[in-house]
Image (cartoon, rainbow over all chains, first blue to last red; front, side, top):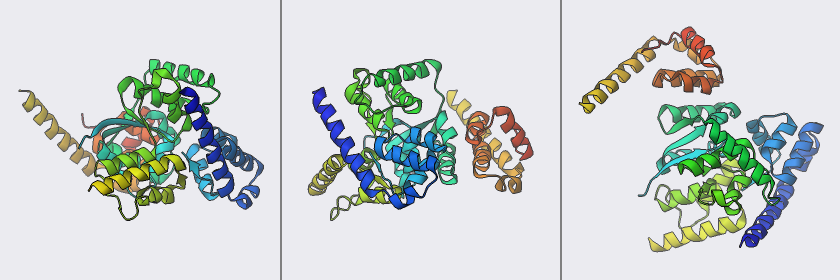
Length: 76
Length: 187
Length: 76
């Protein structure tokens, strides 16, 4: 049963990552300073908002706002 | 209506929820929503601070100051979560919410995937109820706090997505929509 | 007898809140940045120094100084 749960988790994460990649405004992302750009790319791949915010040097609320500007959805 | 008593909300839930046009339905679902102290440290914008402050003034929200053994258990939970490679990473704030949820029976309100998955994978936390915005909306519909649009059962969820740029995973969203359709058929 | 105590307490709370509202320097309060403003407003309504200091992101002592600058009495 735990294997079923794990398969479901992996599938959901894959779907979420594809959505983030597809919906992101890559033109906006690529124009950002390196720290911000890398943090956004990290978030798209790993879905870890706190760590991405730290990478960006922002607090979590500021980073969440940045995600909106970059059209990157939170998929939960 | 069976009203749930208490919930505890972490930052990632509150910063999105506060942007939702019907955010105050939260206070009709719960008697009190607790806000851990660290959340106040993380919240900066006027919109969120004002909403939280109004909630605290009207006793719909209450501050939660964790005690040292709750923090200690949260650290242990983080360590345990690291032993499960399938679990995304969990930080102290959401671990603390899970611990408080377990110890005090509060519903945990979070958008953190690790916190959402922990009850499915960690037996100690299996009885903790974790809700994201989707479950809050669905329960608001179940308890007639929000009236669904039966001609468009996904409308409530779409509104939330529009207000917050938050997307619900398709499988769980479709299950929620089916439940709304069923509720509509019954009325 | 318990009911009398509660009634007396509630009446006292109402009077204390009215006093804080009336004596506060609202011009000073409304000029403050959002966090500080909300914390002062919270304190006026609830009289809870600890929570107000958390909202403000200040120590209790710092917030107490602020309370005095805002001319909000500590009614105890």
